[in-house]
Length: 390
Image (cartoon, rainbow, N blue to C red; front, top):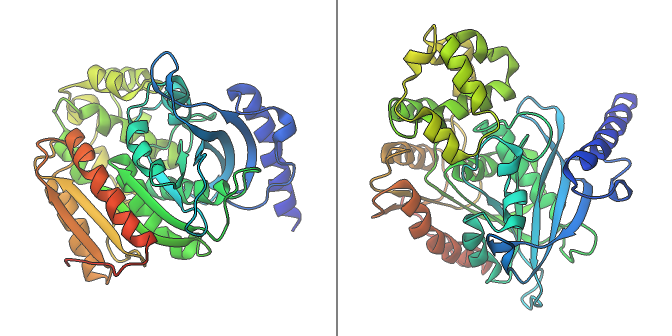
């Protein structure tokens, strides 16, 4: 009990510090004794926009939030995000809460969706609009270290999954949100968000069993990070693999990525630590990991252990229906990675609806899949029978 009290005091003190650095809210709104994952540490009403220059304001009630979550290694942390609630009444019982897991934004705090959506520079807000149009509340996490002090633990699946689940918990705890802790819950994500949604689905029975999770839609899922890294090596999108290396290194300090890099590699990796996704890919396009390292880092015992720990699928499976979709010609995450995830979840007893989309690339897979994911999730909130094609 004494340890828990000390941890709670430390979290509250850190929240106040973060407020002053990020402008999430004034210290008066900070929780003084947050003790549980999902507790709201700070909240502030904000506006969100569809276009740069703060044009096309989205007609919702919105809050930027700071909430308690849990790192990949089990330590308490603080994560920022957004909560969006339609202004119209919801007349079919408790308003559903959807955890929306964004795709790759970058590593710098300026890339966080809670920043970009307030500036009108986040394309994913258009996809979020499909959920809002259904009358559902949407909780959007920035993930660990994106929008808050510290490095973003990019592609550390356990951390990302917990951040998604705790954003949903936090949604009903924001004063004035009008949301119920007993609301039906759904989760949607693509790319990095697809992995986050998948991890949330796997972790939920043990980590957040009280959530009334009805279904999870996960698209373009990088379920096997080593397989994806091998595909990206030497490609125009190698920067994504480098960013994932930095993210795992941030989540698990014993990996000591810096000790495996050449002088050039160290300089390039350090340069992208505070950049957004387009600049990351531009800086490292066409490069290969072997050119920038002094050893076979991904196959070292420490890295193999953590890569295995963050491999989605394997021996566990979600307890709720899942919709998994993937672009046929995805150049970033091979279709075979998605198929393997589908097969492993099916073999483990999950109810999986799989869709191979005709999209010719990764980005268009998100565009084609989003309306399907929303329609599928609507059937889950209506309690219709879950169809699978395992």
